[in-house]
Image (tube, rainbow, N blue to C red; front, side):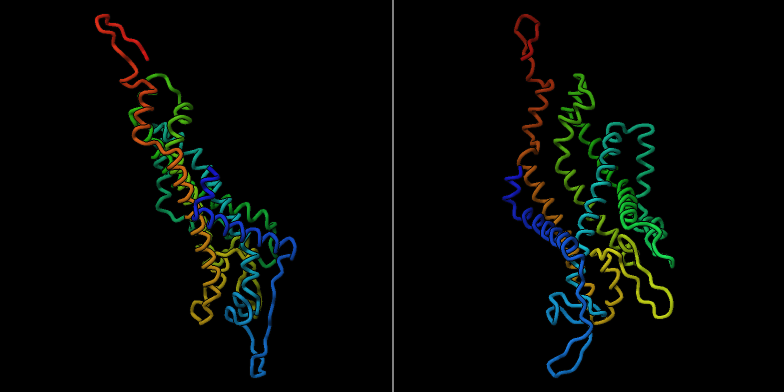
Length: 338
């Protein structure tokens, strides 16, 4: 399957973008200590001193902010937190949804139905609102400084957001599982003594592959949205540095993750310094497009390799006891199995 994925342009583009940004960020952190270049002023063509912000390609490839910090270094610094953080949240929520949704799909009565109805209520409560209230005491720096480490804050934020994104995904998996289990050939397989594990491995999982790939990528996109919403409310991924006293500046992120950068520079939308929000937003959009492209390419390969067509379903039905499995011997009243 990897060879076939290598022939998919969408997969190559998406995977290449993610690997390049992640590798560049790790190199920047390990070999250059996450250095951020600073340009406090420049001399223009008339010999006059001018200060920041500088537009893209004017002095720096992606421009600078009001303090003269080069945005390209912030992009490199935050790439690893954006990519690894989103994948961690997506993987956690997907794993929890899978472990909850499959059993719910097999048992849609009694307590399982009550659990499903309870989880359905979370459809109408935005995950960003719940996450904000849970994470604000942890991520907002107090006057005495952060009492916790960056790793602890990142791990807790991933755990909280991952759990909040689980219920809708779990219900989706439960509904898809229940619908597949109602198919005729699975009912026949059950009547012949097939257990839940056999049904899951031989019949359910092959049908769910494409949908699970789509769900995993959707969970990653949902993670981007939640982190972006928190960033707009200045609750940045990994923690929000806050200055106190007269002349204190705006809150800034600890990690400079891309969605947090959008939140940090969000107020500049009312000015002509458009690139401060636009550049990290472009990288976020490219990241989401990379995820979407990889998902489409992977689903296309799975559809070609393992998608169950109508003829295959009929073959499955025959293998578990379809009408062509038995032949009547004329005049004997006996039945022979093929």
